[in-house]
Image 1 (cartoon, rainbow, N blue to C red):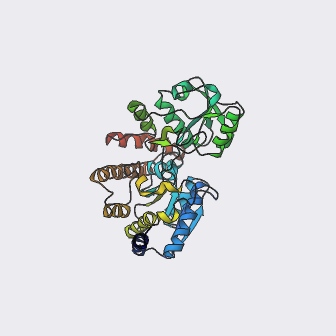
Image 2 (image 1 turned 45 degrees about the horizontal axis):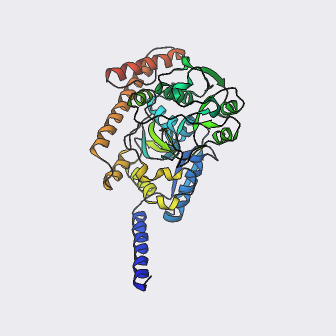
Image 3 (image 1 turned 90 degrees about the vertical axis):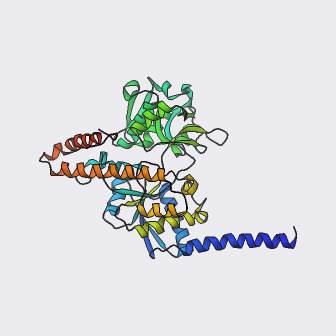
Length: 384
């Protein structure tokens, strides 16, 4: 290569670095930012730590990460303004918005949460089955044993949605109860059950793959529009996704299935818009610095964002996405409808709290009122 070519290449690298530094220099964040995240050792916690390293190295910003064992423990500091943001999952974002399950308790109700950015990785969240059954589609689960996790309604609702893709319900399969997620997958290995829900990259899925039974992930064909409508009517946070990472999967053996974002970086609607703008901008512009530093972290890439999801984006984040030409009128229309849904739920909750019903009847009354108000607005109820 000529000296001229070396010089030109060097100038190109320096120019790219300069552009990156300029972008980072234009991010204004306080000296310390606080997030909640999943428990220590989880993918979400590990990603938050890696992002924190990039923030420290490039912007001299300390990211304090508070681990939480469940949706509520991650949400309490966020609601109490002890942290500005939470890197969470569907439970503390979508279910919190809806005011259902754990968030249907009188101490909670529908939360006005907002999204900044989501991680959409190369794995799926779906039902895996023992390969020795010869199952090819989810319709083949009829009459088979399917794991039901006691005390984990969000996991079980995911299975309900996936069964509905194949026009099945829990009545069409043999429900086998387990006290926890791990035990359900051990149950497949031990031939106590035939199918269970997980991410394709779960350690338990790899254990099943290595066992005599083996593993198979039935597909959710993306061209099956009716099947997808049934699935998303039950769980609108799912989106079509092709997984190339996971037990038994690769780029050569992908799974055409479903996924939802994890982690999801959220705040409340009343969080300062300038802070949200700058946090979103930092996440996008620093991506090359944390890319590849933790499993699944590449899901935060700008090109992987799905701006028409099930929870609305914060105005501060929208400002940034508009600035870089990624936010469309269609995205805004979708977002406005989600905000309207939250407003309807908030008003319905106020009615429920003001009603004179006994405490043991409160949740039942709330769910009935919630359904009535959503139906009156022509919006799907989802949870009853």
